[in-house]
Image (cartoon, rainbow, N blue to C red):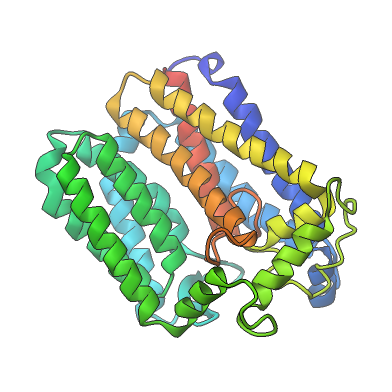
Amino acid sequence: MKNLKNTDLILALTSFALILLGSVILASTSAVFSMEKFGDQNYLLKHQLLFGLLPGLVLGAIGFLLPLSVIKRFSLLVFVLTLIMLCLPLISKIGLKFFSAASWINLGIASFQPSEFLKLSLILYLAAWLTKDEAARHFLPFLIIIGIVSVLLILQPDIGTLVIIALIALVIFFVVGTPLWQNFLIWAGGMIAMAALIKFAPYRMNRWQVFINPNFDPMGIGYQMKQSLITIGSGGLSGLGFGMSRQRFNFLPATIGDAIFSIFAEEAGLLGAMMLLAVILFFVWQSIKVARASKDKFSQVVALAIGFWIGFQSLVNICSMIGIFPLTGLPLPFISYGGSHLTSELAALGILLNISRQS
């Protein structure tokens, strides 16, 4: 095991800044809802720290300390276990439904979302499998694996997560050196399948209509988008100040989830929003640097995929709040409330830092 001094300090500090920003933003954004629902303005923050940050740090430490060869060897087992957990909400009583989505497993004192852990387990498995030998021969098995994952996510349904996971898989499939015609066929098939999913589900079609016309039904299905734009615009250049958001008083839906960026932009203004975006982009750039510095193909693919995951999901979340992308319900990595996504992101961070010290 190489010395800890080889760890990329800049990446570690950037990651710490993201985690700290997430805690500060959540503390402000969740205060009103926490007080109304639980009588304690810090309830959701404490819940996030206890059931998101703490287990995430534990898994991150494991990912940082384990030899990469061990992580690679057990990647298939972890992936299969994640798929089994993904099935449990659909076939057992331990599943929980939120907004008609059966995506959570109830553990009594807490619940978690298996699909969030699927992102990391799929990255590790595909990187281990596709870099083992000639990737081009795995075209049909790759389609079968992605098909199984897609069906499970559609059944929940969790299309936002499906989009992120599918794109992560396609990026990995491309960077391992597969033929362009295989990538073209997968992209074409994926776009046709996504168009069908939008067409035959009314709520997805509604989101698409709002995306095309932000003024569509502003008091109905277009309400969240309209309020999000009002919220961001209210912040101006320098913002209203920490804890001074007006829209968090039940005007904007999902303020602690996918809409947390809008509240932050209202309080911190354009300058604060640009600062947050800069930190996220710098994290992605550092991930790319780690991938380029690594001499091991598996490590290169994993580092690049983790950077793409965090960067693209952040891009989708922020762009959906400002009307550039349709609403997806995806959390903003390291920032939004939700223990499952924070835990999996910290686990991925531990592996990324592990890769950096092996370079």
